[in-house]
Image 1 (spheres, rainbow, N blue to C red):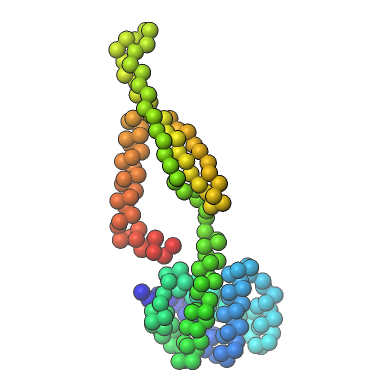
Image 2 (spheres, rainbow, N blue to C red):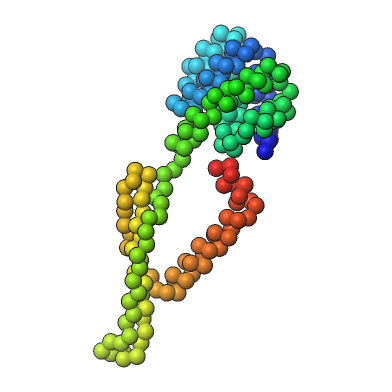
Amino acid sequence: MLLIFEEEHKQHLAYLSSVSLDVVREFCRISIEFLKNGINPKVYAVAAQKLGVDAVTVQSAVEGLMYLLLESSKLLLNEIDFQDSVKTLSFSTELQKELLSQYVDNRTDIRRVLTDMSMALPHYKDLEYRVDVQVASRSVRHQVEPLVTLKLHTIDSGLKESVQVLQTDPASLLHLTRTLETALQELNTVHCKRIVRNL
């Protein structure tokens, strides 16, 4: 799989061709730091002053580089796919090798940052259920009123267990089951597989 770059992103990364490999290494380091700790505008100003350009140019280059490393790590690109993606940017061979080296060295850290940034949703652990049926009462002798009671056990990211008790009638439960089955079938479509792969 190759990365597809928009024109604006290509323009941001084009500045890397005009600087030395040491500056590219520093920009990569800044990008990784920004991913871990957030953006610090002062760093752009200092780097721009050293390079003799405006801060917006440095900011665009660093953020373009950050996007390149982030998307490559998200998609778990191997070395060949990363190289082929970077070749479309018309960089020199040395710059391509340096970007590949930076990507290989930092992709585990970037994946860890992405994992830490993701939402921690509760996960299914267990489900208990009971079906109660009222077959008669004093006033109505021949009635059938089924009621399904569900006890849902979930675990959150901190391994804290929680329990939810739900009650429903069979018709609503059947509708819920059909809706969930439709959602599971939707996951098998090409569009959903592409979204899940990118996440």
